[in-house]
Length: 316
Length: 281
Image (tube, rainbow over all chains, first blue to last red; front, side, top):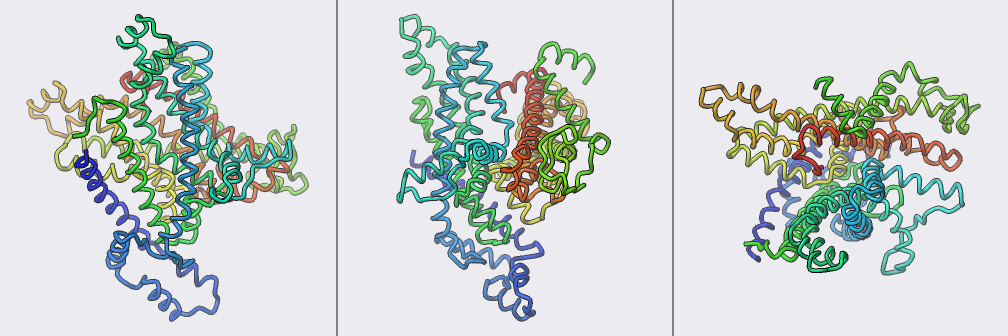
């Protein structure tokens, strides 16, 4: 088991290095870099100013040297400093990351509480009205852009009832209720869009499992339908659904970028967008790296969870 | 695909066929937006600003007095252009990578697959935002980036299919008669991968339309004043939605209907063309 985890963790390294190298080099090959933006705010800037700033930021060194300096820092937990705010990227990320993580976690809870019961219901009542309604709902959720739903939630309650969702962020440990009342709406929207695929998958897997011999046996020995679903069908049907949750982790993070923007959540998504508009390379590379590690770790956790869900799978 | 195929689609998958027709309607509206649109896209008329829907302005007007219906029609045009071009490019990229990687196998396949792994680790939108920040916004850039983004991801599906075809009797037979790799790829592999490719293309049209809208919404898509469905929901227009709520409806509703229609159509195609992929997405 430990050997398996170690091997998986080692396998992450080349992927991440490769990805970070691409981002790092390409970001520096582009014209119109951050110094132009800085100088644009200041009319009396001269060429010497430009060179001074470049030297101060370390941008005058060869790209590869810059990369190795950066990679060396990353291995020590230092992602460099923001070119605009001059704050350490690692520290900024330690503030914004938990916020995005909370949003994603709440969304996941919403997605699962919607998707798994509806998926099971749909499978048990296959080809009835209820099945069609929940399947159509999931197909619609696949097509609705989350930024539109977010816009509707902002505009219409305000026009009809003079109520608009709270847009002020409060840290969870300062005031949990204020925090949740702000985060819950973006979390619901994100969760709903994620629930669509999960619900479809739950339904498909349950349909498969419900046709198995052991389910027939369980029914035959007089087990109630609920017990049968909970004890036999669900445990076997849920394994592919767990994989799917891992596969949807990137979707969750991508969706967070848009919803954080609409609902003014100061998470990683907002940090990324702001950095992109300012061409703040260290921030962009840092977030890119953290997102990559996050997704890979979630997938690792998902793979490991098979061992607990399905005794047949034991990692060698 | 023949006429018989569409007859079968209509008979067996009525719902999916209707989705296809709805999509076609949007496609035609988009293509002929210049003819159908009652007003110009950027015809401003401050005397009729923020008018609610009426017979003169079927979907109302925005804060500059521009006709929302006309802008939505041109938005359809942009969405369709981006959707089709990007999905087309994505399909070509998927075919090239998937076929080469799957057919030749070995070290090359291994290397390509590790690259695809690294690529797929990153969320679509995050990757898009980062790349757009490098190359700048604009229609050609978006088409190319979306094409490669979805093309590389989709190459997995093509590769899987090619690996199966590679091990079939007819491929081995062709190889033993001394047919060149090129001939085998074109005569045997491609035709057998075609159903997967058609389905892949269809689902990619919806995905790229949605992705372009998301980017435009964030201000990283097609630059203004071009009206896209995504940008109509963002920017300065957003503040006026509280005065003219109809502004928030049309672009999002069109997006949802178009993507829903093409998804339903894609599902139906998949069920008819490739029953093994059923339930997969």
